[in-house]
Length: 122
Length: 107
Image (cartoon, rainbow over all chains, first blue to last red; front, side):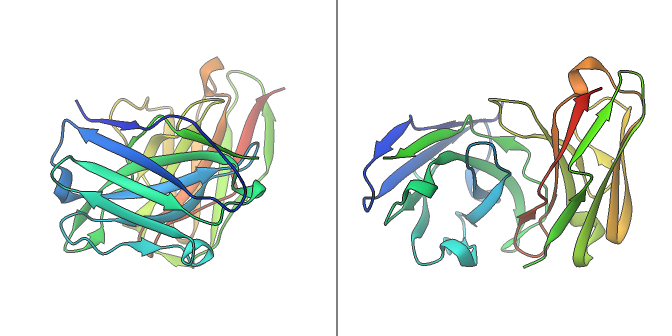
């Protein structure tokens, strides 16, 4: 059974950084893309970026490209998302999700999601 | 970036009624790369439909998806009490983007 388990809630000061982990179990880690999506309180879903571990090169949404770093550790089946220069409007629940990938491209809808990590910037 | 616009923002319906949700893309979306999700408060999104019209594992057949190009639709044939939630469309063929969501609320 596939599970994505994320790290726990964080409280951060403005200007600092946060790193959220997403550990996958029950599937083949490297054959999938891992994307990061955030949801501010009462708002919709916002894609931040993703990575296909077997290739290692991340892809970032333009909005976050200068503040986000996404990487993956194949040895531990864990994906990471680090967001820097935090502001109060970065307060949100951050989700990781898994999508089938082929030849460096996402070919399936993200089907398994982590439980979410609340990051509060205050 | 492909912009997805969902309408209406809120749909007020009674259990047993039919719900029709729209998702319009700013440019053509590969049909195989359009998905719909359901989200309830405090929960992660749940995949309902992928490839515009294929139901994900375990999704009841009252949920159906259709459309192509720039216009896509999610239909819930008869609303059950557990279907009142927020629904998002997503495209994953050209990077990833989400629509703004449609809230289906009890009338």
